[in-house]
Image 1 (cartoon, rainbow, N blue to C red):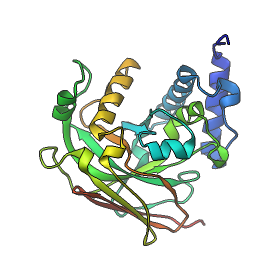
Image 2 (cartoon, rainbow, N blue to C red):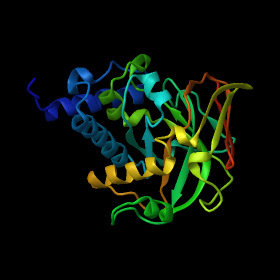
Image 3 (cartoon, helix red, strand yellow):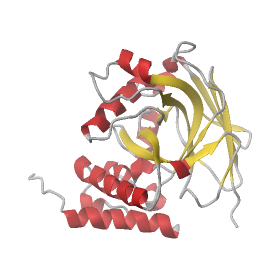
Length: 268
């Protein structure tokens, strides 16, 4: 089958559809009718268009997220490869915060390890030793994934275009150096309203969360936006993600790093 390049007009229409869904708070149909199901370049072009628009509106980039690193999450969404998205300042919450209802469409929670960088990852071969040296510390994190696409009816291109289904993230208070633990050996437990809903380990994240960070560093450098010192990196789910309802209390423990929690606000 001959590949037909996606037009600029189609990219613009897809970006506008997803931005409108976010602004009005109502999920939209998938964008694969405009950009195809598997056209990675077109999907990232849409994501970049949306990112540029958000930055123009005053949003500040604070890091990146890696998505679809867990086989369990890939199976949940019917995809077979990782992707990445951008983290903005208005997506970040602290341990114990109330995340406003409606700020994330169709929210689902997943527990992760977040890394904060002390060095840029812009030069060199981006080897695993270089990745290790660049990390300042790790914290337990919960990503609140969200989809602007109605009913989470997403192909790979849909989720990539939609900022890798990024919604919000919550960072724990306890910081751990890589001298103190191995990310691949971390053990995760996610609890919603007192019920355990997901478990996993660091090894579920591409075999090692540091491998996920390496993958991200190489990918974003190719796109011309290397990872920078001070940025937050959400390295990917350690187990299946779970839907979260308004009013729910969510807690993740990532041993030996620590615990992080949030409450999803109630609908008005």
